[in-house]
Each structure stands twice: as structure tokens, then as C-alpha cells.
Image (tube, rainbow, N blue to C red; front, side, top):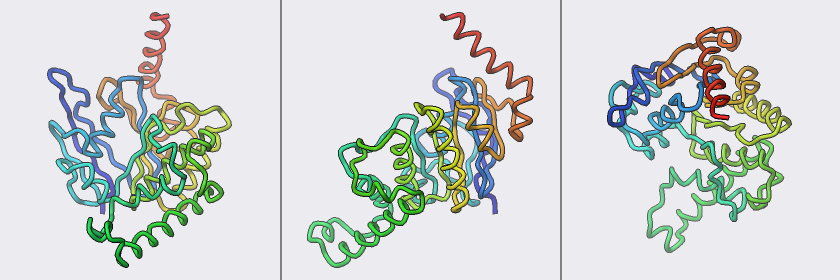
Length: 259
């Protein structure tokens, strides 16, 4: 059984092809990175994988089932969940409440059971609370269960956002620049954390600009530039790929020219 298989996906906005004929795969239990200069199309690919954008062409399969054309809600219930580059926690809610939000994608009780707080409602809410606590325990955030999200250090808030994604019953976690805004010490802790996610059974596809994180965490790497896949391979292969080096140096030259 294939895990995630992306075949020749393309998306066009007017006359612009933001992603052009891109193919890749992720096997169960891997940590795979999707990298590239700014504007390469990385987040657009994530939006295609999660149903935010519909494909112009191509196909996406997850666990041998086509998911392109499905809504974001349908894709989440099939086991793919994501985080965002900018934190999207509920800062005035407690940590456990933020994680519980993720569990409600799979809610089975109806409106009237919720309104009248029936035994079925109370039983399911109790089960969800136990599940949220177990997730927080599994990733070392149990000490923050009753803390308000906004009171946590930035790196821990990132973990809470990932915990909320885990609470959807995700099998595949899509992490969009999880190290963004982190200092070096927080980035090192993030490396340990993502490795732990793999150890406890999750598969991870991440977008990341921090090359220290990418090179030290990835089983394999795919590189995008101007919407096209220009390289793929092991970290050491990507680090020495002339086309990849040129893509990144070109980005640096552009920044220098603007300054």
C-alpha cells in the first residue's frame, strides 16, 4: 500500500502556473522535507494536498485512495492534518482546550445531544478529554495542560499547534515552517521533537527554510524552484546538488541587489 503519492500536480492562477507538473511520494514512517527559495510554490503544494486549492491537473492519493477534489474537512478525516507558518492557536484558551478543538473534527454526537448534554454527549466529551491528555503526555506537554496558550514560550506554543493536528487522528502531519521565528536553542529542541513524532508512529512532511533543521531531520528532500521540482534525494545529495545551490544563491543575489 502506498502512503502519499503525488502525480504530476499542476495549479494555474490565470496565466501563472504556481505549481507545474510536480510528482513526489512519502512513505509511512518517513520525515520528508519540501524546500526551495521564497515563492517556489511550497505552501501552494500544501494547500493542494489539503484541499484548500483544487488541482488544475494531476492526482493525489493517500493510502491508495484519491483525495484530490475532496474538501479540507474530508481530507482531515482521512488522516492528513497540517500546521501553518504563522501560529493559529487560541491564545485565551487553555492548552488542553486548544488540543480538544482538533478532536472535534470526528465528533459523533448531534446538535440536540450537545444542547441537552445527553449521556452520549458527556461520554464522548470525556473520551476526547482523555485522548487530549494522552497526546500532551506523549509529547511532554502535560505540565502545561491547564496553562493558557499565550503564556507558553514560543517553541512550546508550536508544539501545542502540532498536538492539535495530532488530535484529529492524523497519520500524516504537514508542518509548514515549524522553526519559523525560533532561536537556535528552540530549533535544536524542535529537531528532537520531530524525531520523537516519528518514534511514536507519525509520518511527517515539512516545509522549512532552516537548513540546519532540514539536513539533520530529513530522510529525503524534495526541492522546488519556480513551481517546478528541480531535485530530490538524500540530505547529502541535496547539499551538493549544483542546481539547488544555484537556486538558493540566486535568491541571495536578488536580496543583495534589493538592499
